[in-house]
Image (cartoon, rainbow, N blue to C red):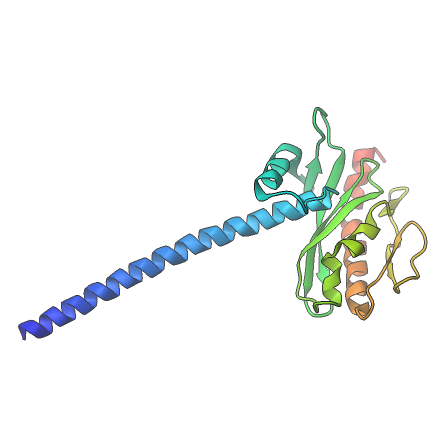
Length: 208
């Protein structure tokens, strides 16, 4: 009986120890995962402001965010501002964008120049689109097309369009992705919807 008791006690100690170790590991991993998710958001906001982050290390991106980016609100909507070194007011404004693609929800950020009409940059940080097709929305060749395009015209949202590949013309149109028509339509729809949601706020800044 004593041997049985020793065996049960040893087994209980092992179980408790393993449980504590697993619990501690899970907690540590959760904290690290949360930190990585928060960094990914910061990284994509900085990218959306038109900053080339490809050669930047994590500490530099973190420092850039802390130095230049501030979180505000546009009524009930989230908004981020970019302030240049030595400036006393923001030079760019960014807001989150989200909408349905082909297979998934698409999440990103889009920023405007100080004229509150011209796109300064855009990024997509979360989606489940097909690699090599719809997933191209996060590639530089696609995102770079948006820079300099008009999101608003005289205070009203433009009829922004993601066209068939190779057919984009005008100030508010970009080329779509070959084989990913529905993803492109999703990008077009979310940009139109989210730009409309922020239009009144940006007009109020301009005094319209």
